[in-house]
Image (cartoon, rainbow, N blue to C red; front, side, top):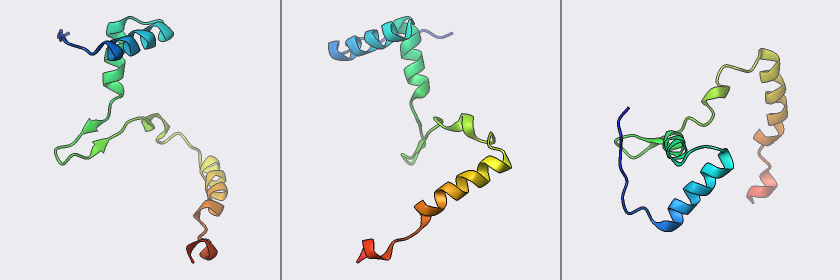
Length: 84
């Protein structure tokens, strides 16, 4: 693996990373790697690609999708009185 050295990390940022590492029971290095992996990718035009919900893609059964659509029906309804 490649080694990257970071210098001049602001003390408050270093403290936050160290606190996160302690909470997770991980090293500071592991924590920084996980934080970088969780960051969205940025395309050339500035748009970001997020992967935070990728694990859900393709996991719902047809029955689950039907239940979800039923639940979302009310949310998709436009209430004209709210737009006057």
